[in-house]
Amino acid sequence: MSLLSKRISRFQPSVTVEISQKARDLRSKGKDIISLSSGEPDFDTPDEIKTEAIKAIRNNFTKYTPVDGILDLKKAIKKKLWNENKLNYNTDQITVGVGGKHVIYNLFMSTIDDGDEVIIPSPYWVSYPDIILLCKGKPIILQTSLESKFKITAKQLEEKISKKTKWFIMNSPSNPTGIVYTDTELKEISEVLMKYDHVNILSDDIYEYIIYGEKNFHNIINLEPKLYRRAFIVNGVSKGFSMTGWRIGYGAGSNEIIKSIAKIQSQSTTNPTSISQMAAISALNSEKKFLPKWIFEFLKRRDFIHEKFNKIQGLECIKPDGAFYMFTSCKGILGKKSPDGRVISDDVDFSNFILEFAGVAVVPGKAFGASPYFRISYASSMELLEKACDNIDSAISLLK
Image: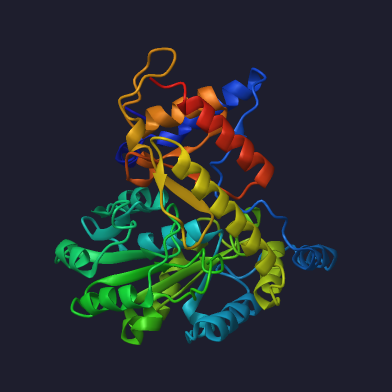
């Protein structure tokens, strides 16, 4: 009899594991590998935020806290949601977890029963489907394409809604595509959701601060306040404050769900790190003077990568509106052969080829439910990005 549980069989091995292992193997052999796979800003956490964490340590704020976050942090989140998003949540409608992923996991563990369906636009963040499967739910994938700018339409959404639909996930700005839905598009989607009272909405706003140009961030509740009672907001300090390793995410929703999440968290991680919570208060209450500079740097990198990739034969990408990813089609490469005679049949083959012949680690689109694409993060220095692009261009020129 197997020692492993049946739930493990619900997961497919991560398609990124093989690439990651190969990158490590190549590095161990002395090869220079440029990693463009990591989804985190390359900037340091601002000093004023680090100072608050150091102060917390010196003040011996190093003990257990309430399971789902200290009151002062919840007050800071409440203030942020009102001042920046015009969303009114009480502190008993807010939960704090060990990163946004943890909050999403707790949300679905609290609300999904066997066979409940969750509609996920593709390309999607890699963890959505597996978390749903772990909760015995059923991911319903809504496919998009480069031609549709990776956006769903209201009509497509309505066609996927069934009696079993429990949640619909919105992620704008998006990982992996960087697309941002316009107010008009959000309003059209909200009009469909208003017809189906049994469908709840998860609005993943983690890239809220990283938007380019004149666009302003709005989530679907801003466009249709009547969805408030059926919506759950997830956010965190990882992306907007370059605090990925601090592991602080938060959620806002109905009091009933928040209590259920606390119940689950009390039997798993218990409280997020006390020191990180104090740092998060500083982050949320800060004037965010560092953000314009960061966004300006991301914008320069985005424009550089977009121009370079679209000049490489076989690659095609659209210009993202937010986040720091370029999701690129490699359709024009398929069917070609590498110098060692291997045929590039899909984006996983392409990603392996780029790793081996260009020394650049990228993430195949298959991981995000969309092929044949690949994702790079341009949260790296311009020097590294220039070198990576040159390497990729040179490697592709070797294909026959």
